[in-house]
Image (cartoon, rainbow, N blue to C red; front, side, top):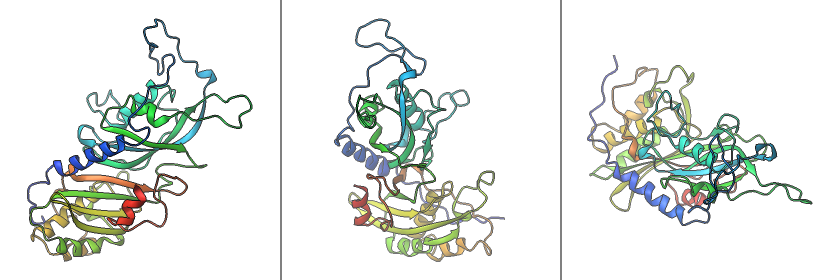
Length: 340
């Protein structure tokens, strides 16, 4: 039977990451286009009629004249009030707002897509309920401006400004650009960067740092995730770099960069590190749990609270507002500069 690890202390306070994510949104709202502009005028979209000013009987949008191109958008959100990133069927879960459900509402309202199912949508990091993102990415077909006579190609709308004008204040579009040929937000991603924030309460960061180094490299992480045997055939994942540091304001940060992550992997990694920092486990526990031949069953422990987790950014080639290759070290000044 799986044996329990030492019990953790109370979950990290939700304010640690939520306050950080809110501050990042405040910074983002000061950037060009992030504050939002007027939605594109026109008739109804998505089967709904819209009014133009006080004029009655606005015409339905004429989709027969619309042209599209493939774009990638960088998005930021505070996940506190959402049931994760991914869209959920409202009939199956009628009171489960997600980041994507709000995004699709905004896309339909601004007539940038005709419907959700035909816009060739892809996402990079599928964050869970309550998890935040400072730099997640989606790709989809967006409507472009009608081509002017003599112009080589159609012009783009101010997608960030249009969408931010109708999105909730806790979701922002940071940038949008035409995607390279064959781009997919999930499969074109080179690496993902997560940061877990926790209020400092006397944890031994040196011990946590020693334990975290065992994560670097390619390992079987089945003891550091929520098992999803229906959708996952391999639990091997590659971690490129880790860091554990204290940050201003009495906040600790566990940062990890990897090619991809399993369900709840970062939260499980953070939970074990917090036990080590509290003196409840030895740093060697990480190496022991990664040895799945000797420890084939995951011990009983709760993942760290979701409110502390932020998807900081994702790496891509050929996207001007995304960090490229090679990946800067996790938690470093060069990482912060690459994501600025």
